[in-house]
Image (cartoon, rainbow, N blue to C red; front, side, top):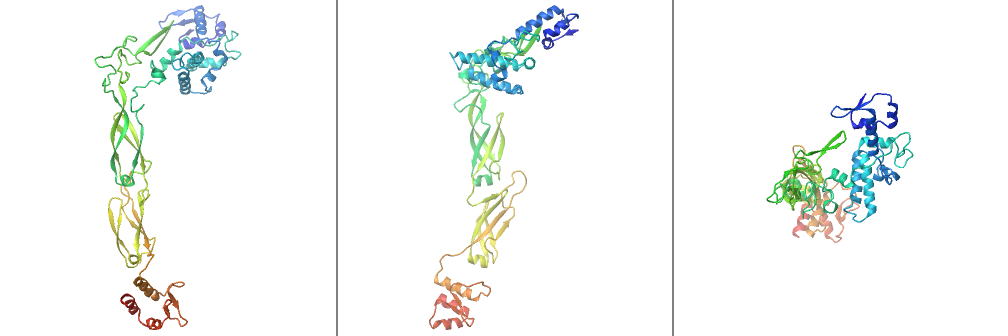
Length: 452
């Protein structure tokens, strides 16, 4: 029977090996060389001793240290570790022994829980401080011991400059006077007219672009990157522990294969900086409030969200618009034409004779352009009759003369009374001229009211 790989080796406890004492067991390394059981025992015991926890950390559960649950994913574990490591990092807590101790704790907890194999062993043998964890009883499991320096562990995960510039996270661009990070979403204010007809707006946005000093080379002017001497330009480093070999991304060049001795001061050796640029945003006709436009600026995507102001004249309903049009009493009775404001241009419309107030007229295809489809909406005009608040004597006489001819009026009309004989007369006149005016024709009374 041959065991190949450290994960299989660590899966055996001392109790398992004791049960195999009567068997001929060999361990094969990567070169094919076999080792007898006694050597396997020594390697196993060394491996178990190699992952022994500190006495301080035994007092607390690793999950409790990171503030996570036992069902947390690796993403949650890494996120919790980063937040705590950033909080207790020695660079941000200089001279604080308590912060240094907590930084050691979270680093040790992350080293165990981030490795699925170590995490399974930790879960199987109980939490820190439990009766089984750290014991030397039958299980033979004596816990984990971190052999990685906390600083080295943090740099391995987040880079050598993870806490450069007073604890800021490492990014592939440098902060500038225009802020930190490129804009991903911009709010663009529009008037109703701009949104209805479409236009081109200029906006200033933060974008990531090549450093103006080093032109993206990441080096100070006059210098060039050299091949990384740590990984010999391979981008990978090899870590050997006895018969086991592990390859990982180079901690010096982070896989870039080059080493920059004199990084650019402007971009901090990142090659890109945050810069402010003016971009032209084409506003499509008919865009609605809250709609988002995606556009490409350089090698980044920018989302433009439109904020459309309301109109005092137009009322929008999708691609349709509604407006009110005031017409006079004469236009309502006799008909005519009026001039109204349209979406794209002024319109002249005909008022049919006998138009009542709140009559709605539909102007097909005169609404807003449909953004996500073809065609345009409609423009609905709601007529409202303007009733004069004051009348001249001539106007009042004409209205009274017209009122005398109405035969379908419900109720009464001010200024007109009905005699006991069924004839009409002016209520305001009670002199002798009333009878003569009542007997004259309507046309005569109108002429008399106008010309005297």
